[in-house]
Each structure stands twice: as structure tokens, then as C-alpha cells.
Length: 418
Image (cartoon, rainbow, N blue to C red; front, side):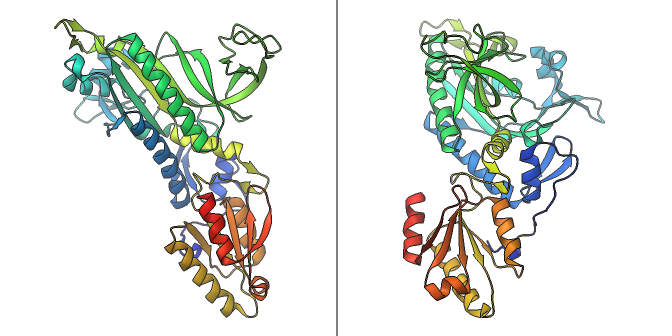
């Protein structure tokens, strides 16, 4: 894409009412637009990144047998009243139609997905089944904060699995846990599996996936030596104490952001809808249900919090809106620079490299500042200086390393990265 055609523009200053770094940088970079507290629109650059995050999640969920659907977000109140959620869930948006019927905006999908599964899973032969969607959620937060990490409208991948037994649920949970860890690793994050209370979803212990960052809302204790990690609200050991799992490490305390979770819902929702299946002996049994969430927009905000510096965002290659930021610096012989930059843009595009081409007629300093702010992994500069050397100036946004490469060397480097 040519930057001159991009309808959004960067801003020098963030809105005065934004405190969170992720929202400040994303707004300044033209990735999102704030509609009101806790509600944002995603602009071309932001949508490209969000879509890449969603596709990574989609690939990993499909790989473990998840089947994607698209569920309604406008829910009949009857289903929420049937499960008790209508009165119990305090963040539920409730609407009343002109027909005097009541509806809810989906803050989760148990009330919708359970009757769907009930219609098709009538026998043990139909189980297990895992159904997921990637879409919008709505929660009536009293105080939306942390930018896109906690909003009233937000993106989420939520998956629901139905099983014959607790043992089969545990098996699938272990598979899903590894898939989640792959998702976070592919997006550049190191997530810790953390024990936590189930909250409004379940009375049982749940598991959250936490990323260490000062922008988080949770305090955890973890062992640097092994995988033990727990939310401080239920932790049996405190920071400075010996790890209860391995006994070798000393527990450390840290601030963390939740980017995913898994809940053992047991039989709560099937019982509410009288959902049973026939086992091998032909007897009616109630399936065990698991719920698995990843906040897609929250994940995007967390990536910005973790990967940014004083100049702007530093996107991991896997989720960057573009692979290369091509910058042309037009001098006295601007025609030659433009011709060569245009050729390189065409070459890279034909080879499948995603390129944002800054062809604008603005000062070099403005172009470089915008490039640092937007945070695309590789910046390639074409100028009179580089043309005179027969080279291209290539800079890594992550390391700041600058190299003078030929076009062939650049293509080789990009093929290795990709």
C-alpha cells in the first residue's frame, strides 16, 4: 500500500483522556479511533494487525479440532433467565425492544452455544466436540480502562467443548493449553499458565494465561525455575518463599495482564437446558463443558505494551501490519529516487512481501518519525545517497541495526525472516 493513499494519518500527541500506553500509541499511529470510553474502531493498519492475530488463533484452534462458527450477539433474555445469568451477571447489557421483549448483548456465549450443541450431539458418538467463534463481545464495565485491554466492546475468541467425562475434558484442556501457548509464542509473547478463581463462570479453579507487564491488572507469584504460577488472590505461597511445585525456585511477584483463560464449567449449562446424550449403554448422561477464551483486542493491546519504546510501537513480524516500510527520500534528483523506489515497491509486492510505501512529499524527519511510531519490523530507505552506493539502507525496528544491502541481499534477508 502507498502511504499517500492511506486515509489515516499519524498524530504527534495522544488524546488527553488516554492514560494507557497501548491506546496512546495506537491512536497516534492511526491504528484505532476512540468512539467513547471502552469502545474503539479499528482502522486499516489496526485491522490488518488484528486480523493477523485472529488468523494465528484460528490456525491453532483448527489444528486441535475446533470448528469455527459465528454466533448471534443479540440474545433472547429467556436463555439467560434459564441459566440464572440474567440476574447474576452484573456486566450484562440488557435491552428492551419496542415490542417489549428483552434482549442481552453477548458478553459470553454459553447460553447460545449450549442449545446449538444440544441439537446435534445426541449420542456419545457425537462427542467430544469443540465449537469456537471470533467476534465481538459487550460488557457493561463501570469503568472502562487500560485502552483496548479492557473495554465495553471488544474482540474475543471463545471456544466451548463438550465431553463424555471429566477425564476427556482434562485431556482436551491439556491439548488446548499447548495450543494457547503456541498462539502467544507466535505473537511474540511469553505467557504463564496461572491458577485463579473461576469467578462468575465457574466455582472451580480456572486457569489464566498471563503476560508480565506493568500495564496488567493482576498480581501473580511465579517460579523462575519451573512453570508454577498463581494469582496472588489464591496463592498458598508468597513471594520470597520456596516454590511449592519444584521446591528449587524462589517465588517472585509480578504485575501481569491476562490474555487468555480456560474454565471447567462442569454440567451447569447442559443441566439448565436439559441437555443429555445417550452413552454406550443407551442411558441418558449429561456432558461436561469447557470454556476457552482469548481476548483478541486485549492481546493486541498487550503486544503494544510489551513491544514499544519511547519512539513508538515495535511489532513482532507475525502480527505487524506490513513486513516492510519502504521510505523514499526525494532530493535534487528526486525523479531517480522515485523511479527506483517505485521499482523496488513493485518487486517486493510481486514476491509476496507486504509493503507500506511512504511515497509522500514530506520532510525526511517526518517520515522517519512516522516509521518509528508505526513500528513495522524492517525499514528500507531509498535516497540519493543509497543510489550512489548501489545499496539500500535497511534498519531493524527492533534492534536499531542499520545495514547497507543490495536488492538481492534484502530479498534474501526477507525470505529468511518470513
